[in-house]
View (cartoon, rainbow, N blue to C red):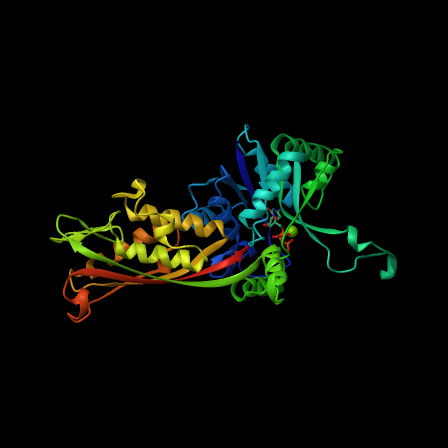
Length: 410
Ligand code: CTP
Ligand code: MG
């Protein structure tokens, strides 16, 4: 099954009115358009991504995509057109011909969740077309000349439409072709399918799935990103259920600690770096005590069980394996919960050997395994002044703290 994400990011951001184009503005320290790309890039059902940018922005976008390690999934970055509909049409033409389903998603909607990808995809498999939608909260009136109200619509039947809009590839291709032929311009992609008399299913989405359009939206998005807005305050199981349904944006902190004893005849591996030293650490995997502390911090922050539960000692699959693989798999678990990693701070506690010469390589390994920028990873080292088991050189300890952020449905 070939599933592609098509991301229109070729707008001019007129309503944002900023000097830097909207899609490149920072949200939570990361360019806006990369937020949804990250969710798509790490989703196992998504085969590849085509990104549509303003003509001339291709290189800048490609550089950022590579910097955030998303270039494996982003197959093409192509120039868009004058209207959003033109950008989408050009994007559709750039997809592989044997694409089965395409998720069209605005670059300006950063709070996409894996769950919403899955639910629009499941609905599109049933009906051919499915769009993310939120029940309208305000009363909607239709105005005539002189801003005089003509009528008031029945709110209970109204939905505000967002993205992803997910379609069988052949269907949306045909819908865009027909619209182009008829010079019809719609305000979303689904309306082009509706014109063909084909069904479009609404998929309820969280009202945190906002589109960043004005400076106020950006402010709001920063709040959602960092402050747990959207959390229902209701106590008890009902409140818990509600929080789960609406999804809440939040920060989560996690802590990890690990110790391994020296054992003769073993290699010493710390932060994925093999360090020349007469003794190594004993353990089931490569006994990389630093990576284990970091993985445990990440799992803890996501409310998951610990590293021993996910990667059991008894499981032969993990015997002698590089802990960088454990870290990669941990990152995948974190992303499934809709979190991204804000930063990691870590500490190796060892009397010997000297860690400093290897720190930069360790940071690079960790950043790569987690697919985050280097600046978000710190590795420090300390001795314990010859005190305690680390001071006597019996083993090495490590501790880590991490911060996760994002929209979680847990
Ligand atoms: N878009 C696009 N090509 C266009 C116009 C819009 O790919 N010709 C993209 C935008 O980059 C955005 C999404 O479509 O990710 C939704 O559009 P919108 O929020 O309206 O963004 P802009 O068009 O950039 O903003 P404005 O309408 O305020 O100029
Ligand atoms: Mg626009």
